[in-house]
Length: 326
Length: 154
Image (cartoon, rainbow over all chains, first blue to last red; front, side, top):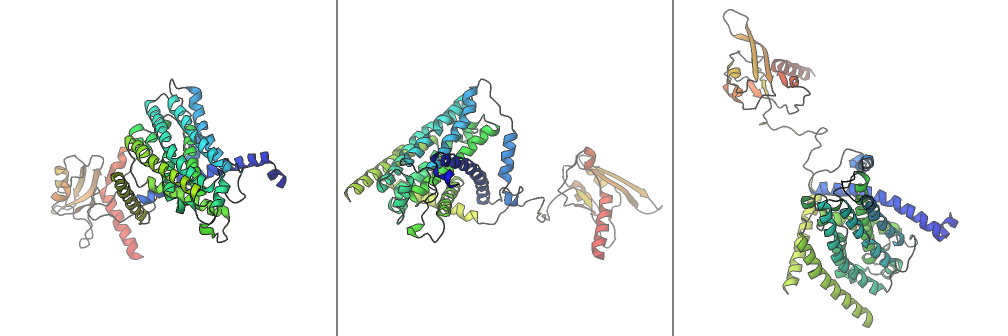
C-alpha cells in the first residue's frame, strides 16, 4: 500500500477513482439536501418516502435516470450532442486533483493549483455551449448563449478576488495558501474579495438567483432541454460537483482550508474541518437559492460589469499596493 | 456615492431576506403526509349525503316522501319504500345515490321534512368503475350503527 501511494502515477489514478466515487456520493447527498432545504423553507417536509427521511430518494432517481432512453433530437449534431455531457463533467473532476482536503491529503500538490482549477472550470462553458448548440433547439441555444455571456462576465471578478488572495499568500499552490492562513483566515483580511468570490461562484455554477441559463420559466430547462436519461444526469452531476468544487476552493482560499479558526483545531482532524466548512458554504448557496428570485439578464450583466468588476479591481490594486509596501 | 448607497441598502435587504427564510427553515411544517397522517375534518365539510341517526328514535326518520328525489336537479337519488301497515307511514327499503352525477348542491338536505339527511365526511371517493359511485345509504347507516354499538360495548 505504501508503495502504491509513493508512486506518483498510482497516486493519481487512485485519487481520481476516489474523486469519481466521492463526486457521485456528494451529488446524491447534495440533491437530497437541496430538496430537503427547499422543502423546509417552504414549510413542507421534502422527500420523505424512500429511506429514512427520504435519504435514498436520489438513488432511486438516479436508477430511474439510467433506465431512460437517450433521445436524439431530429437534425441534432449527433457527436457534439453526446460528447457535451461528458465534456461538462470531466473538467469538474480535475478540480479534485489539487484540492487539499487535509495537510497531507492532496492528490497532487501542484504549484499552480489555483490556476489549474480556474482554467478547468472555464472548460464547462464551451461544453455547455456545444450541448446547447447541438440540441437544435432554440431554448437550448438561448440558454447556452446566456451561459457563455454570464460566465465570461463573472469569471473576471472571480479571478480578481482569487488573485488578491494569491498576492497575500504569495503562492498559487493551495497548500501554501492554506498554510498562510493558519493564524488568521483570509476572509477577515479580505472580506470584500470573499463576498465577491461567493457571488461570482454562485453565478459560475449557474445557480439561482443567477440561473438564467436554465431559467425554467422562460427557457424550459436551458441548455439541457433536449437531454434525457443519463445525459441530463451528467449535467446534473456536474452542477452539483461544481458546487462542491467552488465551495471547496472558497474554503481553501478564504476560510483556512483544513485549519481551525485562529489556529485552534480542537483536535478535530483536518479533513473534518475542511468538509464541514465546505458543506456549510454549500448550505449557504442553497439557502440563497431558495430565498431570492432570479435576476433579469441585463441586471445580471450590469451587476457584473458595473459593480463587481470595478470593486474587485480596486480591491486587487489596493491589496497589491499594501502587500508591496507594508 | 449613489452606487455605494445602492450596494449598502441592497446588501441589507439581502440579509433581511435571508433571515426570513432562515426563520422559516425551523418553523413547524404545515403539510401532512396524507395517507400516513390525517387531520380532523372540518365540521362544515360537505361530502355526499347520508342518513342521520336519531338516538330517540333509534333509527333514521325517513318517511319516503320522495321530496329529495323530486328536487334533485341531477336525478341522483333513487328511493324505495313499502307500506307495511294499512294506516301508517311508509318504511324505507332502499336509498341509492349515484354520486358520479351529484353536484353537491344540497337541495335534498334542505328540503327534507324530517331533516334526516346530512353531509357525510367521506372524502376518499376513488372507484374503478361507474358502479363504484353508487352508494347505498341504508347499508351505510346500518354499518355506522353496528360500529357504534361495537365501540359502546368495548
